[in-house]
Length: 287
Image (cartoon, rainbow, N blue to C red; front, side, top):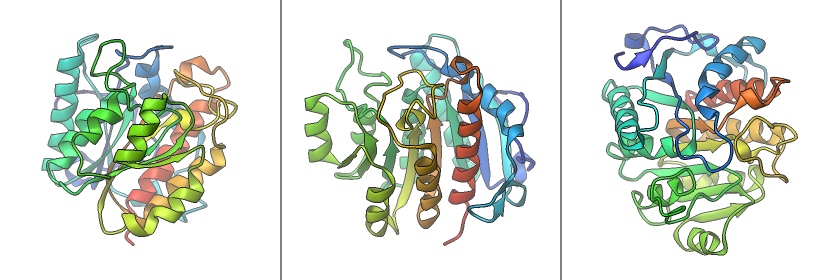
């Protein structure tokens, strides 16, 4: 595929682009982050860490090598140019969907989810978005900017039909964001697994886009992220919640805000790789 640089392939993603059911690609962008930059290095570090895990998921009894997944590499983005980068991300996602494939994108900062959802909703107007995060990301602007990792879900909500945003695990927000979340979506603070289980029945039958900000996980388990927020869920709850997605029609998915370079133990990168594996296997399960 054009527009991508070739890097090491994620473990078990052996399909060619033309034979794939799912295209995996990295988005090395962190131009609007408000605390610690570095998530642009996440895709490369997570690929490296993937060789510390197995292709086989014991919990799902499925193997990445049995799924047609192609690792296209990382998008080539003009450093610091937000509008052009968002346009290139949209074009890449649109191109994948045009091929009849789904995608799994690895950020990068959370703003990358906006053009990804824009590409998906063009084909699925009844789209629902499932969002795991420590932060609501529902500000109308952040320091005067409408396009920011702190505003991304507000912009996404503007694309969706009413009450089509489902947020889980939020533990940091302004009073205004909480009011907006309750009025315009389905807001489940602090927890992920229990409320997600309770929402499955109403989500079934709809096309679902899943966006996971890795800081939904407590920094004790996931120190390698740009805006760590104490009091999060465990790595075990995160993995089990991702596995629940096999009950839904997940049309595409992203995982963002992984910043393994700030974690010398590499446990953050390995956990991110395992979330990728479990997410890919869940979204390709036929229910």
